[in-house]
Image (cartoon, rainbow, N blue to C red; front, side, top):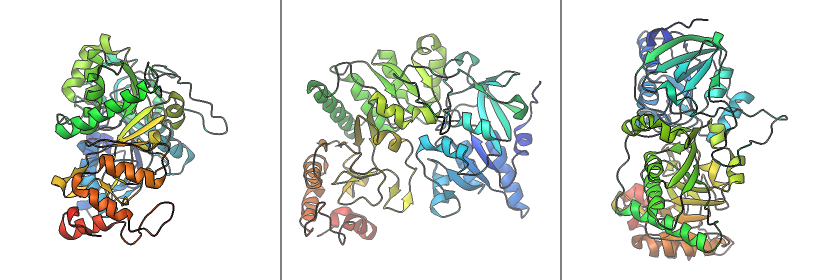
Length: 493
């Protein structure tokens, strides 16, 4: 069959008010970029005419401004799932304009198949090649593309020539069966390939192809500074100590790393530490730092869900494809973030906390317990199933006015049972095998900033006993003080 090449505006005409629309990609990598702008323009036009126009927006993770930003500014989203990182979308979530379902990324595809989130009407996918038989070569991100393309009534393709067709083989497309027929996911080391290099869809569903030549909207990361470098060095030195103690094998274990400036700095420290051997990664987001470490020989292989790397670095990867093609694989989020695989491979997981408390509970999502920042993302998929789960954060924020370590987190995403190690620029708190009071003493002594240490010790004295010595009346005193005066250091117990 021959596909129709259409404009972005014509593609948008297939999307109707109330539709649930699934999008390819994972982060801005591999996300659609032009049809989404046309959908936003359609929404504005419909609103100006006095008509309702909102869609359900379902993605693999966060996206670029051309998707989350454009649709948020057009007030075109009735609900958003499972993760976002855009300031305009964040404002809509926190003001109630858009309902938000914050989910573990690994669980979304199966919940879509189970019908928990309703019907998928349209799937919009970015590809770099398509055959007459419906074989698609995805671009720099996979996300939930296999599931939404199977469930959707119609498929719209963005054929993005910014990504060369010669990257066929980068992807490993595999979708597990649903219960009671599900089997183990046969990934036994990060480099194992278990699926197809192409995404096979019903060609009759493809209603049109929009040609594009747009870069991924991946911003650069800030260079490591004194604080992030110290955090990274603390992580690396801790892991070296674990190797010397025999708790990590000499060949090392696969690494999962979150996304952001701290994660980039941590990876840099792992690569530069002479006592850490070249390692493999089984992660969700492959960042610039990973590409640099591959070129240096410090990372042997990386399995992920997306190449979330800056446009210039991505171009260099495509140019050096003969070097990278046997060192990278991109999988659906259901596989890259699989709790089963994470547990079996024995991952060392390193994620960033928004705040943590002195007992080892972590808040990844909410500012002052109420305002959504981004979402839990894949951190929960990995943390609870890790061989060794590490959370990192600077000890303070806003020039010291906020302590990232508090008596009681204002929102809990990862509990004390899952968090094994907490690391700031000041030191390492190894929480394994410790009771609540022992964890508190360890965190205060090793991770809390000097401006807040005495406050934490004072807090521990408020409890009248119990296994976990909390004061329900004073647990959020630091948060309340910040809301009142703008500086947690003014807290008094």
